[in-house]
Length: 85
Image (cartoon, rainbow, N blue to C red):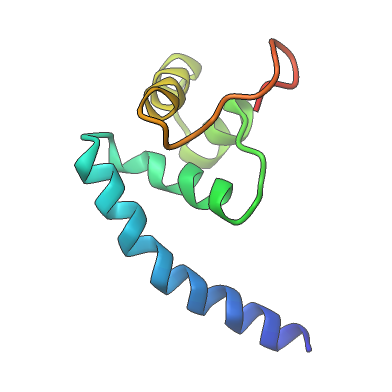
């Protein structure tokens, strides 16, 4: 059963990544934000610390990427200060 779940996730990723790439291009965002968009798509919380770890960016650049994605409507900011995702 677990192998089927993993296969289904890979199949879904193959469908969604081209759409994510298209959105990134349409909104003129840096392509590194794709990882955060994919995580959000599959229901994971995207936080600045998780994005920094994923992309190995400095905090200011990570914040700018996430704010830009939120300003275009691709991500929705929830929460205040600590716990914001």
